[in-house]
Image (cartoon, rainbow, N blue to C red; front, side, top):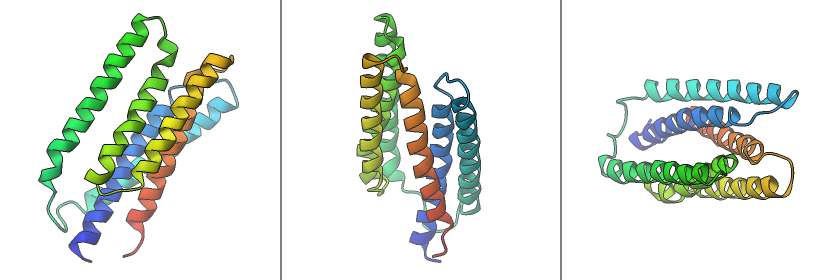
Length: 179
């Protein structure tokens, strides 16, 4: 197996690991009654299993293939720090303004936006549609929260969880597919 194929498979494993964990977190955001609560628990379990499988794949390929791209480490770190800063500061402002129910909307929007600079950095163009979809979920959550009795967090938690889990499963399949 070539170094590039191995590196791509390891990256797919890491993607499944990270996005599986974040999907599990998003499924835990909304407060929901049955039967939706049971579905969110099932989604969390599937997301956890996806993350574990991604971690196993990544660990199996650690040290095999091409070396880590250290040139991408600094921009990656800057993007993630900016994401956490924007989400944290925005959440603090929303809470101070008495709009804490819209914190998940803001966080989903920031997460969606952070995939745009990550796509070229990680050489994964499919992160752009994921970013668009997460931004659309944030918008849907905002509109739903403002215009109905349905919680914005419910819309955003379910939507973001499903999108991130779907992408994590797709990455996992890509990583385990024979070369």
